[in-house]
Image (cartoon, rainbow, N blue to C red):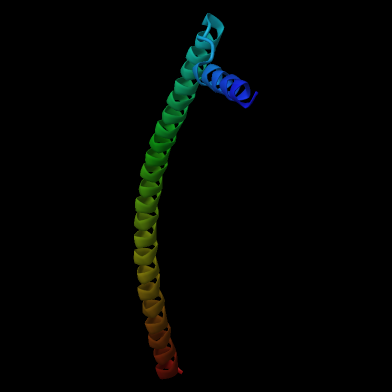
Length: 105
């Protein structure tokens, strides 16, 4: 009896190892899964490329804004220096006027 059970177990293992041949539905399922998987990979790659382009455009715009702000800052510095010179000239003018008033008084 042990020999019969051993033979039956061997046949069961052999049947499980070989299995039935795949049918058309299983093959179609694998093909569909592969197409969907590659489609997802393609969409992800396209999305990453679009994100890279958007990042480059944003960086370009930020660089332009930084250049403009730098030029505005330089213009404001020049304007501030001119105002300082005008203030100093007005102070000197006030001193001269005060001296003239003292002399005429």
